[in-house]
Length: 124
Image 1 (cartoon, helix red, strand yellow):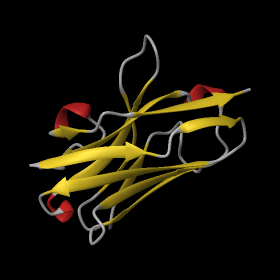
Image 2 (cartoon, rainbow, N blue to C red):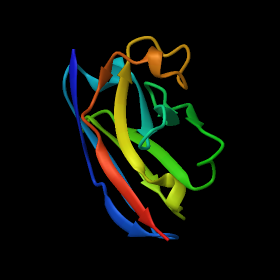
Image 3 (cartoon, rainbow, N blue to C red):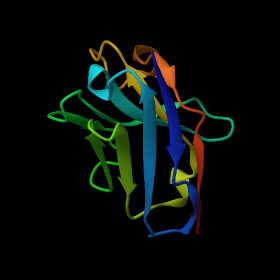
Image 4 (tube, rainbow, N blue to C red):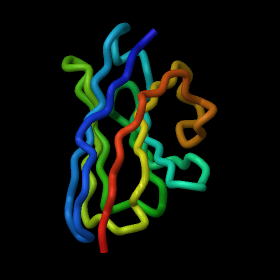
């Protein structure tokens, strides 16, 4: 089992940058594929980015490709989401998630463990 805690959210102007971190405790982080999802008010949770256990493969939603970068440090048990060129439509609660079986990294149902989320607000 793993516990996940997100940090780094906040308020930023459009065009700015934010870095989100996900700190894991419990089992070795390299056991899990890791992902970031987001949920805006009144909308379903949507996939943002994911990274494989050994950091060899990354996946991005089309809406964030070229602007966001996901990385992980298994030794430090952290996953990072660097968000650049932020847009008002990026406003959401961002969640970190861990998957035991990483066969469909873009699907929320593939993930077994979730953090509590961190709010990101992008003003226009």
